[in-house]
Length: 358
Image (cartoon, one colour):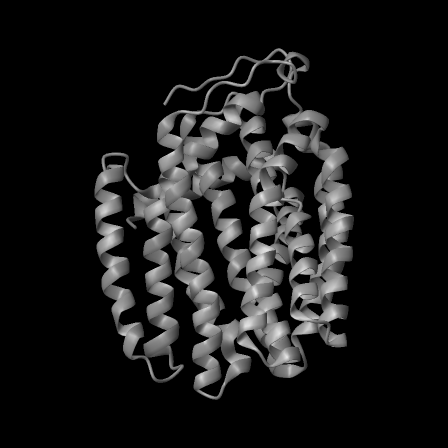
């Protein structure tokens, strides 16, 4: 990144922080951290308590399926009733579900029961990340911010997600090394109850309230191109799930199972840097070029993982980090515009005209 590009990016991100104030990004980050913690933490927790990677994978998969199935309805509820009403309720239920998962795993409950509890934990995730993006876009539109600021806001929010997926697994890994993964999940339960409610009660929560007529309006038909994006995101999710299970199995085979969380955390370091750098990438670098370059790089950098036989920085961690950075660079910009288009339909304040120009 050149000096000019770095300066431009810093100025743009300063404008983004000015929209929310310094407190909201902190609360929003802490509120979404439990989501990153429980996804990988549930796998390590069940693997530790049951001794079965199959049971751990089923529990983690059920948690992911619960989040996928109930995420869209939860978002519609927030659109209809407001974030201040919906998010605290989901945060409280999610905290109870995580606590139940920890208690059930420690008690040695059967795998089907753990899978059901894991599904409940996933279904009750308060989706602070997507709702935070909706809120930030609404604030930017209400203030008349240019499209560059809106794009930077989406990049900033995506980076918060990436950092959470660095720190969450790292916390699980540290807990596993020092004591037990259950401590990390217990902390996640307390954090989502506290910071999820704090995010919902922040003064900016009213910015994303829909217009009164929007609730009764006929929803537009989803373009066919969105279905292709959904399929791509589904494959991306399968990749992340395979990474979680694969890293757990790899560290188990190498005799260092407690290092799984730390290795998975290393995957997200360069991804966060890639997310921040999106604000400085020239617009002349088209999506097609990014897609082809990132796909080729991710494929090439993932091949050495087939022959990894240690957990050194020059093998698993560094290569996984580079591969995931390429995967994020592949999807960050298209996903940002998709989120922006969706947010522009729902995030307008009363009396405000939506600006969808590019």
